[in-house]
Length: 388
Image 1 (cartoon, one colour):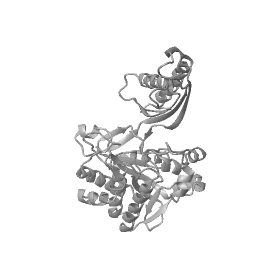
Image 2 (tube, one colour):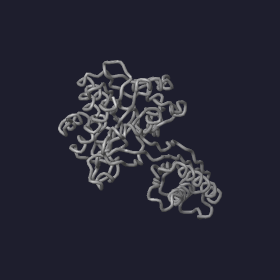
Image 3 (cartoon, one colour):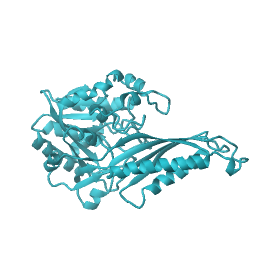
Image 4 (tube, helix red, strand yellow):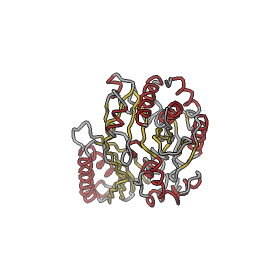
């Protein structure tokens, strides 16, 4: 049996990496992530597994017998100023499972799951299943102007090989991921762990608004081309288009303003809006409606508005056989994006969530009981042994 103390010991070497007074930051292709990958290699060595890096930069700790194998794991990167369990708990639990499983099990740490640096969420898993626009992502830049291809190269991954990532899929029979619950659903249900039945559809829109800089104290309102005021109206429109449906989530996730000065009318805004719902048809209609609102707003405000889809993942139902193997765990719908959901497009996959009493995630206050995590890891172990 996997015990809470073992998970605590495994996480002890990873938790300090990237941790600061305001949370944990381990962005893709950085020194902090490289240090986390060194921890991964140590865990693999102790488990008798060999470490390989695939063309997308994901790390595989593989059995020393021929594949294909069932695998488990998650990711090591974080959002900016995030929590200490998101991703990390699934990788640490994966090594505990791999050490005990009666059949060979691989552990995977997918590259750049969060997409926090280059706006490339589920980078490694999308590359694996062949659903990554290689030319587009390699040309993306971070806030400092660093090109993703250069960042990969600096971190020891060859961007020229990225298109070949799907060749690794033949080594994978299926994938199960353990992850912290990012809602209070399990807490309300009074269960330490649950199985995800399906993932909701998700879309991230990138909006660029181009107005004109003017003096804030002398320019009449009807003569302004205020990009930030238009962005504010667009954010409200995005929320309004979701209506009263509690299961349709809309978030203005990030905004950049230029010149961002006290006495200047904002001229340029870059805005990212996130929409999520189990109904992919409705999500697409939401995007169409927002584009129509943007066109009307642009004409009225004298601000050019471009709405682009930065990422879109249709909802996915997890494999019935995997759900059966997870036994009597409560069934859940998950609104977050995860690597398991991407892998599920091409291989049997599933997810186990661990109770989160507060529901807080992507923040330093993120917390779970390691006793609950051990219960989830043991459910994962039993399922993988049954499936393998």
